[in-house]
Each structure stands twice: as C-alpha cells, then as structure tokens.
Image (cartoon, one colour):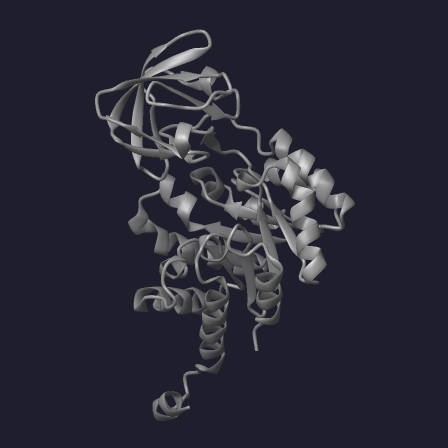
Length: 338
C-alpha cells in the first residue's frame, strides 16, 4: 500500500505532552513548526518540547517571501471604508491610523495605485500618496485586521526568499538535529538553491507552491526540491479560488512526472477546528486529493489552534484507511458492511 504521510502543525492547542504523545501514537509522520507564528526565542524551546515527548521528525517551515503586518493594538483593529491610514517603516503597533509591514523594504517598494489586501481579503487598501519613508493609503474594503496577518499586493515586488529570522531559526534547528525544512513561497529555482545552500545536502527540502511565480516555475522548483507542498490557502490569494482544484491536479501531475513527493495543505478538515467531526465536503476533498496522487496531507490550524487535534488525526487515518481499501473491484456491499 502507498505510504501516506501526515504532517501536523503544532501550536497552542497541541504543544503539550499529552497531545504530542497522542498525535505520535495516532500516526503523525512529521511535526511542523510554523516560523511565521513562532518567534526566534521560542524555536529552541519548542523543538526541545517535541523531542522530549516524541521521536517523530520535526520540520521548520520558513516565513519566506511574504508580506505581513506587524502587531496591532489590542490584537486587532477595525478599518472603515474611506478612512486613510499611514504605512510606515517603523516597527510600531498598528491602529486605525498607522500600520507597518515586514519585510522592511515593503514601504519603499510601494507605488501610488497599488492595491493591498490584508488578512485573507478581510481588508483592502490602495496607495494614494508616497513619501520618503512612508505611504498614505485609503481603505477601499473595510474590515478587521489581526496581528501578523498575510498581505497580498496586486503586483510582484522583490522579496528575499529567506528572511533573517529564517536564517537564525535554521541555524538553531541544525544544531538541534533538525533535517526537514520547508521553503515558503518558493518562486523560482534560485530560491530553492539558496535554501539548499543554507540547510545542506543531507537535509530534506520541501518547497511550498503558493504563488503565481511558483506555478510558472513549478518544473524547475520541483526538480531542485526533495518534496513539493501545495499551500492552497496562500495560493488562493493570488489565483481565483475556483481555479485551485484544477491547479492542484496539475501540480500533482507535474510532481508525479518528475517523481518528487507532493503534499497538500489548507482547509482539509477546517471545520474540525471547532467541531469534533468534519463536513461531507471536507471528507470528499481529502479522498479526492489522495486519488489525485498526493503523497501526504498537511494539517495546520486544525492541529495548531483547533479544539480537536487528536480527533482530526484519527479522522485522517480513517480516510487513509478507506482510500487504501478502495479498488475498482471492491464490492459495495462489502464496503458498507465492513
């Protein structure tokens, strides 16, 4: 039978002895630490906690070439349509009048007319004035902006594929025996080469496809990587959501042709963040993903911040079991009764 990997992101809901042990016993094959939501100071303690309670390998998932807003006062801020907000290069806590982003070169790269969507399309702002070290934007779509949320610009600007924080975290990981690393927003083969030079040839490099540039350079990225991960969430920021199912099929087909493992992430069992069972649509999505040829399934919010991390993994195992049992010659009566 095909070996299906289960990658589980650890976070506030699961970074404890009891849950780590249960996830290990329930068949998780790789624990993921998301550096976008983990400070450098917490990298070593997080690795130590996981290694104390489990022998399952750990993967450090880089921040990568992504724009994010910094901390917002009181955790989130409501912006209203028509309001103006200053985008500054200073490291400040955002409010209704000011906001700042990482990496630091974002402000200098913005131009009048640019449209930026923040926090998964929750809010959209357009640049109307540009200064030497700040910009003024008008809110076109009002909404709530949380802290450390991804932002998407309506055109490409250059972003370093590996952030200073990534480099520091990777150095910590290497000293602690980590050999699995994921490159977020792999846009071109050169990005993968930079990551490879940093982690070494003996480590496994998983390149995440989550941008238009990543799609356009998919073959070269795949050939330079040890595995590919389709991040459907971030990819849907740049590509219309109705195209995602077809792009997923194409990416998996390319990975299969090159003979590199391919994992699929985002919204697999999203309802299990709050509920102990998934929806029928989610169950169909997971099985369809496996039937397309995916080699692994990635749980993110479900296991990091969800209420039912262990139940989620058990459900994934049930779905994988059914996937293995299903063959063209299976008798439907046998399937129902067993």
